[in-house]
Length: 107
Image (tube, rainbow, N blue to C red; front, side, top):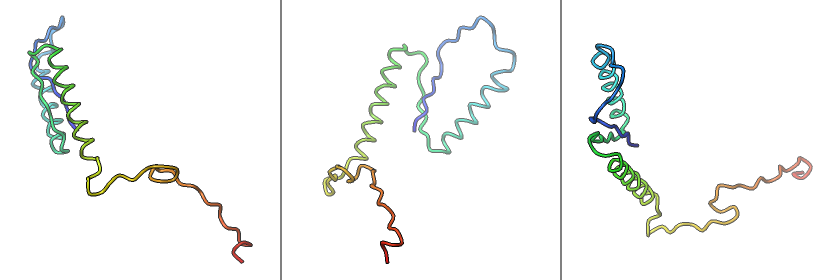
């Protein structure tokens, strides 16, 4: 799993941040959650906030497509073990319920 984080860029707010907000809350929470993500094996991808939205979109889209392609290649059957054909009751997750044998049938 990946977490994409945008860093940098320009901020344009009409109301300024209260004094100490970034140092007292934003940065410590960023560090906390970053450590949690790394501890859970999440690959963090940083985006350059100075790039255009279109360029960032293309980078993220390409990364998602590559991840999906890699995932599908990992789950593809190996040549040594061909995939089973699926049909009714074969590998498609469906099971047919058998009627329970009555006590009279078993005697």
